[in-house]
Length: 403
Ligand SMILES: Nc1ncnc2c1ncn2[C@@H]1O[C@H](COP(=O)(O)OP(=O)(O)O)[C@@H](O)[C@H]1O
Ligand SMILES: [Mg+2]
Image (tube, rainbow, N blue to C red; front, side, top):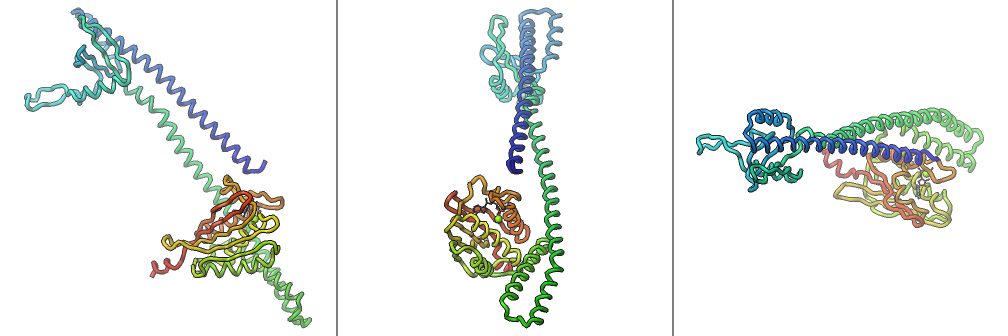
């Protein structure tokens, strides 16, 4: 199994584990809530019965008993008579149950609106408890105690807090892992450039000496050799650029891309046609050695995707409003399934027998980290072809802004 399938498997495993924990927590709390709600109803019933006794008799001892029952009742409740008028309430917000009416000489009165809204709320929550008092059918409405209300909310608050915590931990870990990867990547590139540097400059010197010694200024073999050494020098230069923050220079994107396409097209099979188009004037900040590398990776992938005859089209366009330059590379190759549009950029992902799966991941780094741009699969259809799009910042207006 490749590391990406493995990673996916782990993701699903962890996700299902999280779902099990969350639903377990919800189920258990709902079990607790049900039990407490049941016991609150029982208490409300006991209170209602004691009230009935109180109203139906005039036993003084009983009055004391009902007072202690009332104190043990934790649920807010309201008793209404058969017409729906409030007889008695308990456990409600007492600052709101009374209002001051200056017209009544500041005598305290019930606020009917408050009772109305409380009653409506209670009616919604629980079936009333019915009792007969002095031959009249009264009803006791009650609502959940504050404790129960909190308990109902508790699992959601708890799970939200845990989710936020996990998200933060994940972000912290993955960003530290990413910076570790960056260090390895950059370190290796620097070391490679450094190690290649010395033999390449010697080779250059040897070639010069050879030309002099054998009078081989125009010799084809020597020229080819010189070309290859120059190529090696470019490779070393690319690696050294990756190892340090490269300087961006303003270039016409079309010209830079065209130079590379012209260099590239003569080196691949004649079955593949190349086409360049678009706006030749758009400019962007480029580091040419690295940008060539990007184009090379994309063109190589396009060539690899084409089986037999096909064509590759490179188009430069722009969005004036957003100050962007687009470079679209379209091939008529095997295409990429939609589910893999992001995956192709991950290091190690390859569908080629001899591939390393590093090309696009490196390309993405070079575009994002070194050119402050974006790259993505713009379009692709399996069996028909693919378009990769690079977005760079158009520098023309940048300058205006600075001056
Ligand atoms: N133009 C394209 N058309 C179809 N598939 C592509 C194209 N470019 C990239 N891919 C897919 O993305 C994978 C990763 O590409 P890359 O990172 O360059 O690694 P490699 O070329 O070594 O496989 C390729 O193996 C291929 O499956
Ligand atoms: Mg590749």
